Image (cartoon, rainbow, N blue to C red; front, side):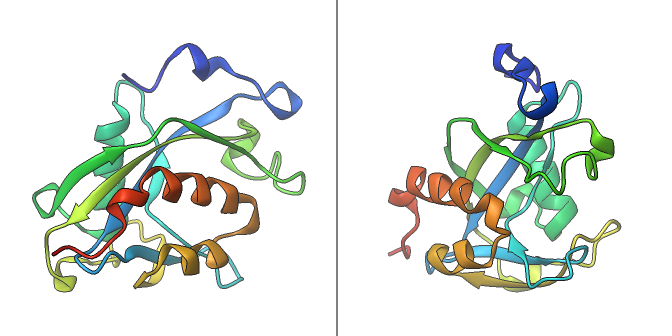
Amino acid sequence: MGAQSDAENARGALGLPYRPCAGVVLVNRQGLVFAGRRIDNPTDAWQMPQGGIDAGETPREAALRELGEETGVAPAHVEIEGEADWVLYDLPPELLGRIWKGQFCGQRQKWFLMRFLGEDRDIDIATEHAEFDRWRWMAPEALIEKIVPFKREVYRTVFDAFAGHLHPQR
């Protein structure tokens, strides 16, 4: 399925559409997830790799592209183990009209669980368009406390969907 679908036309606040987005839960051998600290947020906000789905791009393609753009992790260093249902979130009122050129009311996200097969040295957040200034592996519960508050329910939903995969490998 590409970036466009019947639900894509769903409207939220102010009649604006949701921005189609793909996200990655990158989990290591210890069952911890990758978290990056946002460069553009003055608070101590951490999140997983995610970003918009380009026209003509599938959610899976977007997820792999965003993973590479934000972490430097190549597709050869991951195995896709799961795909969650679409999740919506609305921007808080103070951000409506201020981000994404005011074109969207929130995001419609497709999340993928990817097992990290590489080593920590394969991660490089100093990419051309860096979004993170630090990164670390975190327990899902700890990351929920570090994400911006309006995304917490999304993270809970996504972690619940992938609960069977968020464990150390044997």
